[in-house]
Length: 136
Image (tube, rainbow, N blue to C red):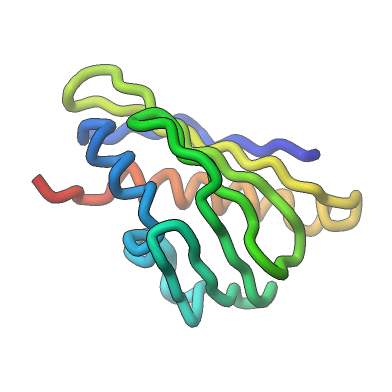
């Protein structure tokens, strides 16, 4: 498995709010770039969508540890299997740190083709989670 990690991001929101938001796929459409993702469908625990240049993809939530971690996995037919973890760490009431880790089953050719895009995606998603204006 190939491992990718985002930079550690900071948000000024409590980890409870961030956890609540990222543990429900119905919220994710607000985090993803609309120009890259099409045909978004979701329930609380699963989502399906099309990615320009890649095709159909799906995710499901496989584990949640309240206010600390949400783990996602591929669901259905996807170009390659991967696992994504979003980790939250409370520093203070108004300081939560966010880190994304992705482990993927990639052959050497796929690794060369998608490696930089995976890192870019993790940091983009991390920024979106950190900068989202969570309701009070």
